[in-house]
Length: 203
Image (tube, rainbow, N blue to C red):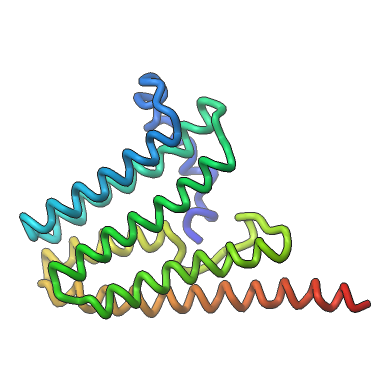
């Protein structure tokens, strides 16, 4: 939702930040993989230092770097369907790495599983629709999309460092509820789109 609302304003910022990567002649796919490596590294570091504030801040930097692959693709004229697919797959593994780390450090496996399930089902609801009818990324203005989830996790961790570890428990519970709400929101929209096509085919 946020990404759709501010895309025109934030894309020039990503493109400006991508300048060193473009000059280094990195490909978009290399930036995507580097973003995954960064997320995994800062997550492993959290197992050692166990500082939610440090984890939240370093995750924010890692996710910001990960967002530069699209800017590199645009500036180097290297946009591709395979690159978009790789980016989507890496996004899921990034979320898995973060949620598994939080589950391990805070012993919140059930909540983390509920969070990951909500994220994956949200993604699947759109992907499955695309197998039935042509769709694009412009018609899915859902409440708790990837950018919202990333910001939520980073803010939650910073607040946990200030207010206490109980914020992680509360935060993950909220994440689970919001992600499943969004999955149902997306499924409802998809059902309506598919039903309209069914009704038209019967005429």
